[in-house]
Each structure stands twice: as C-alpha cells, then as structure tokens.
Length: 459
Ligand SMILES: Nc1ncnc2c1ncn2[C@@H]1O[C@H](COP(=O)(O)OP(=O)(O)OP(=O)(O)O)[C@@H](O)[C@H]1O
Image (cartoon, rainbow, N blue to C red):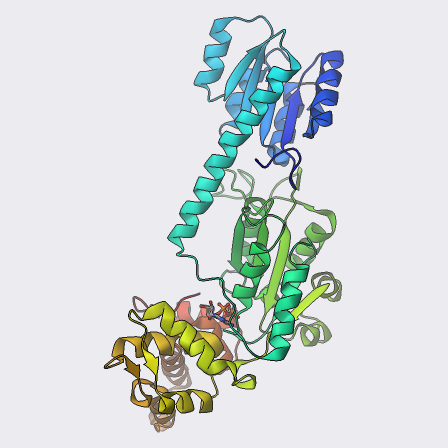
C-alpha cells in the first residue's frame, strides 16, 4: 500500500480547538508518517482547505468561528474535496447523522483512541485514492493512451533515451525541444511513466491553442466572482496535476506576463488563482516543450531569460526525422503494427520512397502515412504506390491564378490547402506557413474553417 512511508505522505488537516488534544494528535500523526497541518478554529480550517490540497481532514464539531459541520458543508461544495472525518464531542447521534448526510466519510466520538484515528484516516485515504485512480483510469481510457515506446536506432537519440530514464525520477523541470511531430509529447509521457509517481496525474496543455486570458484561468484556476461569468471556483491545471506532471506544450506561446507568473510558481511551488488572495501550494513536475528556438526568443525579448534558465535545467533535444533516416523503416514498421491486423509488410520500393522523403511533419506525418497505407495495402504488402508522398509534391506545384484573387482570399486558400495537406495538424501547418500556432489558430477562427471529422490528432 502507498501511504505514509511512500513518496507522497498522506496529507492531513486537523481542526481541533483544544490546544492540548491538538498537540497530542499532531505529534502522534506526524510520528506515524502523516504530513500534518493543525488549526484551532473553523474559519482557519476552511481557509487552509481551500488553499492547499489535503487527502483527509479531521474536524472537531465544536469550534469557534465556524463549527465543524459548517466547514464540512462548505468544503464539500469545493471541487475535489478531501475525505472528512468529524469528531463529535458530546457524542450525540444526531450530530453524527448530520455529518454523514453532509458527506463526511465517518465520525468519531470523544474520547477516542489514537489507533482508531489512524485506522480511520488510512481508510478514508484509500477511498480517496480509489476514486482518484478510477477517475484517472477513465480519462486515460477515454484518451486511448498511445503506446509508450520510443522507437529509435539512431545512436544520439538512444543516448537521449538513457538520459530520460536517468532524469525521470527527479522533480526538476524539463525542456523538450524539436520540430513538430518529433515525439516531444511522447518523451513527456515517458518521463512521467518513469517518474517518482507514475500513478499521479499527467495533465497537458497546449499553450498555442488558447487565448491569453483563457490560458491564465486554465493554468492557475479562478475564484468565484473574479470576473463577470466566473460563477464558481474552478481549479486550474496546476492544481489538477498535483502530485504528478504538468506538460506545457508550446511554452514559447505564453505571453510575458504569464511567463512571469509561471516562473514564480516554479520557484515557490505556489501561486494565486485568478482573483484569489490565498496562496495555493502544489507539488507538480513541469515539463515544457517548444518547437521554437527559445534562446532566440530571449534575444528578441519575447521570452524571459530567467524562465528559460529555470526550465532549461534538463534539456532534451529531439532531432528531425530527416536527420535520422535509419529510424524511418523502423518507425514505419512500428506504426504498421499499431494499425494493421494482420500487420502488412513493407516492400523494398516502399522503404526506398520513405527513406528519400524529407518528412516535414516528422514521426507524426509518417504515422499518418502508415495509417493510410495499412488500409490500402493489397495482399498484405505496402508498396510505393500506397504512399501518397510523390503526389503531394505534385499538388504543391500546381499553379494558382493569383492575379484574380485578393490578398485575403489568397491567404484563406493557402491556409486551407496547407491544413488539408497536414491533415489538420496545426503545429505542422503553422510551421509550413511560417507563422506561430497561435496566429494560425486565430486565422482558423477568423476564416471560420472547420476541422473535417477524423482529421488531425492534436490541436
Ligand atoms: N520515436 C518514436 N517512436 C514511436 N512513436 C513516435 C516516435 N516519435 C513520435 N512518435 C509518435 O508520433 C506522433 C507524434 O509525436 P508527438 O505528439 O510526441 O510529437 P510532438 O513533438 O509532441 O508534436 P507537436 O510539437 O506537434 O506537439 C505520436 O503519435 C507519437 O506517439
């Protein structure tokens, strides 16, 4: 069982107004390996429960300011509340029933034995873990988690993989760089899987896909009433990733103000929700990725030097596929195994075509090409004719009647064509168009383009 002696101790809040009893409880629980915070009144309990993540809370019913039942009621309205055990002083059955009705895990009457408390707290924690694991498993299943195998025979990349395993258990931030489709997301997932808490959440955010204001609330959460329309508190991804990994894809797209907020969060392990006045403390491993050259962005004053230093502690650079031709047939085979059943064979002429192509969309493009080829393969063999690579070059060379078009119309058509060629992979399309993914995202909305069903595997 994970728990007090494992990597992440069980976090317990004790709200007890009798100082002597509180001190004994704190001492006992700390000695048993729990991570304990203690407060003396209901108001402080509520504040702490709202600002920090706890697994279990022990609430005395009779407390100044707010009584335990009221704290219980208010905390149960929060997203992801801890399990709560209510301690009744007078032992009335009515209070106990009221607590259970309000959603308490259980109750204990004073006087109680310390061993009883420990057993109850562990059980409450197990219930919480089961619920959380179940939630993670469901979301993982929903996302149909991609296979976590990084295929390569290219020696420098094998060295990178060895480093990934070595640095995975540390909690330092990691920066993964490389062109779109080179496998940055896959590396982030591998780091998480080999990390100190693989069962913890893996939360990813594509910083290129959201507008500034949305990004901030998405990342850091928002307090109820922070702005019109914020009608309830929303937890940010930083909090949802507590005890796990937060993967910030396209970090170069964060604006300078958010970069400053992120830096502070990384340095202090805490932040304020939008509109919030209470510090939220979290323990999250941050992995950032970028297709852009962040050092050049620093020179252009578009990226903070200090943030780059902070996330650059561990840097993993992925080379483009065209620089490691040795991997092309290997990866092609790997993807065929994912799509084909029975798995088709690659003919020699197909391998030659694959090796000659430059793969601007890297492994993702190869994956898409293999998905298509596995459908077309006749007699269980993928031949050169099943690969659309030559045809693509031809399409790109088609003359366009530019003289009769306005500049905006020309832009609209060009973007539509590139999106189509990249099968709606926006990172790749932005790269081919020479604009940032965020600009592309804006243009897509401006021109009202709609992603055709089944196109593109990532925003
Ligand atoms: N070396 C590899 N072995 C196996 N699969 C790979 C490899 N590299 C990439 N892939 C697969 O190719 C696809 C694209 O990779 P991934 O999403 O990790 O790229 P990325 O660099 O994060 O792209 P982007 O910058 O556009 O977000 C995924 O399906 C991934 O699993």
